[in-house]
Amino acid sequence: MIVNGAEWLVDDKLSARWPLYTRGNVGEVFPDVVTPLNWTLLGGAVESSWRDAWQEFGIVAPNDFDAERVIVCIAGGYCYLNMSYIRLLGVRVPGSSVKAVDKQFLGEVDAPPYTEYPGDRNFFCSLKLVWQTEKTLRARHPQIVEDMRRRSAQWVARYPGDDASDEALLDYVFTYPPEHHYLFGRHVLVTFKATVASGVIAGLCALKVKDPGLTLDLLSGVEGVESAEPARLLWSLGRMVGSSPEMMRIFDQGVDARTWPMLTRTPEAAEFVSAFADFLARYGYRGPNEWELGSIPWRMQPETPLRTIDRLRRSGEAGAPGADADAQRLSRRQAARYARRKLGIVDRLRFNKALPAAKVWQATRESSKSAVIRALDSTRRAVLRGACPPTPGTSISSSSATMRPSAQPDRRLRRSASAIGVRRPAAMSLVMLLPPTGMTLVWAMPPST
Image (cartoon, rainbow, N blue to C red; front, side, top):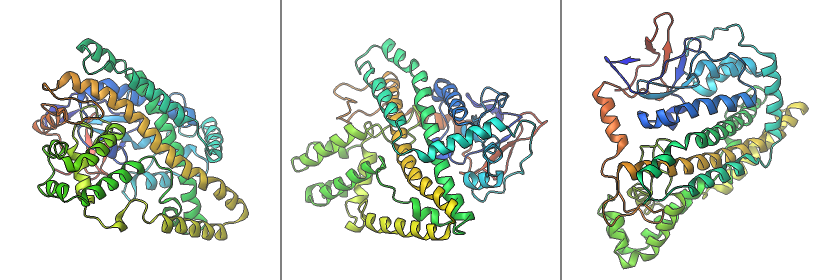
């Protein structure tokens, strides 16, 4: 594809059969330009694992695909999800509709009308989707996330070490795609199961209870979500800073790359330093744009979580994570009682089956994401260790966050993207391939500059 007269390195050939693409949903996973390393290494694994996951659930039929990349593509440097193919959910899932799928994935965007093609409707896919949906709604303790955690931990344990040779680091990096295929594919499957379960609740609330907003009350504040723990720990660290005049003085100077080394040299901050180092050891693999190999995780850029602590140190107790847990729990119970009163016997039985399943799969989705990101970060560690070796006396161990790369690959690539005129699209922009004009792209919503 040509963007302002230049071709982005890893743009994919877009599908003529499935021409509608969106930044919705996937824009949160890949908010920035996707680096060539990330896509050439993992793009194939992302596409193939996504297809395998959806085939397992029953969405994919033989001869659905007309290109190497269909479900997830790079256009103008940015990642897009194929909305045309997702619309098949509204055709192949009994009781669903394209309009309902568009609303769930796109919101109120005025998308091009759906045109049905031969093969869109598939009896065997519909039958399998019904069976898989029933299995999803009956699940209470999914084994899938335990398998993912074990596979992820095994990959992390294979890391050759920071002092390994370039050859060993490269071997580790280029051995990763099959692991990503498995882990990412499982995550896609879990995410879809969570979408199906919550979609059943949303459908009942909208069509039977006549209160679409009730879904939010029913599913908000789900307990047991793994991603809530870092927030709780950061809050506790903020309380520690707020109770120490010396640490308050340090944070009052502003948080930057000097803050963490300054804290490690401050005797009064010893307890905080120990707790924060433990936080980095447990969650240092997280960070901004964490699906991208070129991004910098918390363990290498501690000022990122320290800035969060800086905001939290002055917050009142009412802002503590879980402070409104009792109120949310009461709201969920009241919403569930209200929904049951409005539903008939058959719909009430389905509601009683889907509600706990939706909560289980929401929590499982967060856990599955963590398993993928842990493995991806171990691969990123090898990439950045080889590309940006630490200066003498620095370390990138999980308990230390003093190493800083000499240059950030994602920033270099963003500058390259800017130089060839790649612009960041709006969060919910759509890109449409209009036959027979080949690679011409039409933005249904104007891209932001």
